[in-house]
Amino acid sequence: MGFVHFIAVGVGILAHQGVFIRGEWHLRGPYVVLLHLTVLFVSVGLTGNLQTPLYHGALYLFGLFGSMVIYRIFFHRLRKFPGPTGAAVSKLWHVWKCRNSQNHLVLESLYKTYGQFVRTGPNEITIFHPAAYEAMDGAGNTNSRSEWYDIIHPRTSPIFSRKPQDHLERRQAWQHALSSKAINDYVPRIRKQVAALEDLIANAKSEPVVVNDIMQWFAHDSMGEFAFNENFGMMKSGAWHKIVAQQRAGLSLLGPMSTVIWLIRLGFALFPFAPGVKAWNAMIGFCDECMDKRLKTKVAEPDIASYFIQDIKKNAHKLNAAAQKNLLSGNAASVIIGGSDTAGPSLIIIFYLLALHPEYAEKVYEELRDLPAPYDIQTLSTLDVLNAVLNESMRVLPAALTTGTRITGPGGLHLDKTFIPPDTKISAPRYIISRMECAFDKPTEYIPERWYSRPELIKDKRAFSPFGVGRRACVGKNLGLTQIRLAVANLISKYRFRFAPGVHVASIEADMKDQMTAQMGRYSLIFEKR
Image: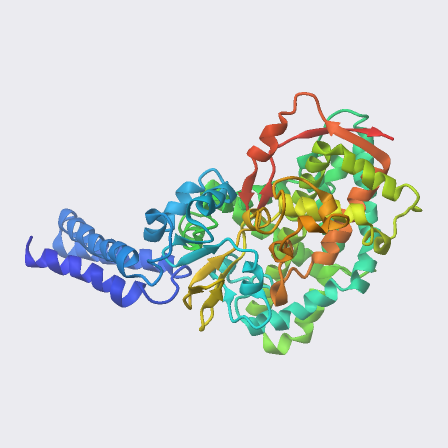
């Protein structure tokens, strides 16, 4: 190998050790690719041939990636944590393992193989411990949100903001929009959508109904009503709104790719015509359109968007026009995705589990039968069996299976005699933690009684955190629970339901996809009037 060849390899090593080993690169990936291509084209122009620059480029890449591999396996500060060698080398290992969008099963397998603290990336530790949520987001922690939250950059919102001060300032508008008073204003609209859901089921006349469809329609139509004063009309038409269907296609991109945000951002920039990227861009465009339309509309009753618009007007002197647009757009994306793509999957899961365990649907009915209609939302929030069914459903099959990553603060993180260094990406998958034997007796069994009459079945309550904890807890928790309680209570009070003939029950959960939220295998129920 000649001197020039050694230089090419050495430049690759220097590029890693002096440049790429430092800081975050997920937003600069396209520029890095373009820079390298520019160097290649200039080299071709100077040498007059393609072969030599390609050969030197290959040597450069050999030095670059060789340095990365050696460093990550033998010298990285996380090298002593157990985990697959492939994961230590590159997160692309994780992408391959998640190619079927079942990250929850991938992580469950890693937990069973390696224990409570597993190295799942070059600079990433996945924590399987009941105290993980308190450690990540509890009082006094100095952790920050990871690069995953730049997925809608340059759009932003309190849900996606990585800067603590921005998060606190912008969160105030959300707190007003989702306060108890505001929720009471939204309840009539939710009741209207629950009635539409009942009509949809009644019109089926005891024929099979695809629960995955109707619950997503209900969630999106409801969200449109209380967020933007707009009904997407899916329950009325009995069909998917084109753009809402594209939203699901766009979010499906997150199944295999969510663990590697730099790859997603690279795809957004360089491959805009790829099917998944097109669907994602259509979804974001739809969010922008909803907010643009709402800005031009005067409403008689306040909606969630009203609070966002008021916040922008109040802080207009702090934000330029582009920042205002990105904040409004980011808020719209957050409420559309967060407000519908969690409620829908939660209802799909609840009715699946109640169809598996119909005795609990009957217990809820007995609890409801003497209550006057329409059901008071405060009364519903106090019912033992109804809320136990919701809690147990969210424990056994949480709507957010594995999402939510953080970066450890300057002091690192201490948990159960294990120290995770500063600036390390950490995650704590709910699907595994909420089913751990150290936290729950008979953890994989569906036993709602553990939440009211058999508390001894709960060993460590910290393992149950469907809405998060601390200042980053889900601000829409109460609205989401109100929506779910009203839907479940009204349907159970009027219908018995069972799996339709031909439904392969075992495949419903086995086919579940982890695509930011849980997407259950498709199934149908027959609803029969009581």
